[in-house]
Image (cartoon, rainbow, N blue to C red):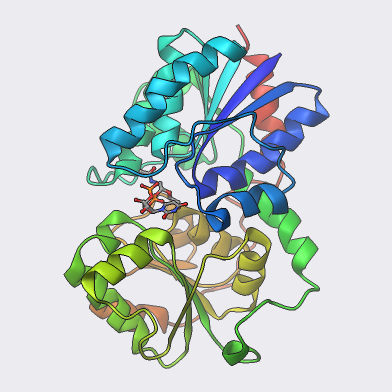
Length: 353
Ligand code: UD1
């Protein structure tokens, strides 16, 4: 049995880690193809190093570009890779351009496709991630869904008979890393040590690419009483520089993205998370840190229903949402028990034609 994983962006490296481990335990041959969508060391290499992921077997080095160019460059290179390795399955992760390109290349070469984290929907057709999810779920032979909500979406799109709910693999990694770093000191800038602070990230095109919106979000964060550690994605840095927006204004403290264990440790030490990332909303909930999401909707609706996440679509509402009353304690576990990767690999094996 040979499974070929296609990954390219930061959240996919996190999901790859437990899948690579589960495949290794079962003696499955695992080929890793890195598209090169994320190429900065702190967006890519540190994840492989810190999460113990084997080196990629092939690197497509596509780099950045418009959606069509980036996705097209991946498609152009994938045929040869799939011919060379001739895998039994192609496994794609999440909702990036690398996900859609990997799935499309494989289905056209009649190689079975499994989609991990299938069935998420924001119902916002402006989001490139939403296009990627829908395309990928509908060409996949096996949809590995993280939650019952995801299963309900796939069912309503007629995909129930190719879906298995396995739980969320990001929970697997998070629990392992949380336990490993719990006793360590958070690696924080000097000025935040021993203080209350928020952790923030912003990278979605809808937030970063509109100058007025970005200016207004940054101004709201800068005006907060509690300092905010803003871990700046390269897209955010690039747009802020282009629009002349100061990311160190007021109570903001901006630094580069953190390696995953340090990010988890920083969130554990923080009083709240402010983000537009999908993964971080869920990680905040799993670590029981209140989250404010700078978007009009979220795919992880369980975090909202349980009171641990709140949407702040309008930047002028950010402060009030961040400073809301603490959520009620809960021990509900909508994202599984930390063994999703085992179930996902077993499902792939069981569905092998
Ligand atoms: C991508 C995914 C998104 C995911 C996110 C996680 C798509 C459409 N979006 O968004 O679903 O949540 O990754 O981070 O696939 N850049 C660098 N160095 C890097 C990577 C990117 O400088 O290592 C810069 C480039 O200027 C690039 C920009 O960041 O143009 C955006 O990168 P891109 O891969 O297009 O999308 P993300 O915003 O990272």
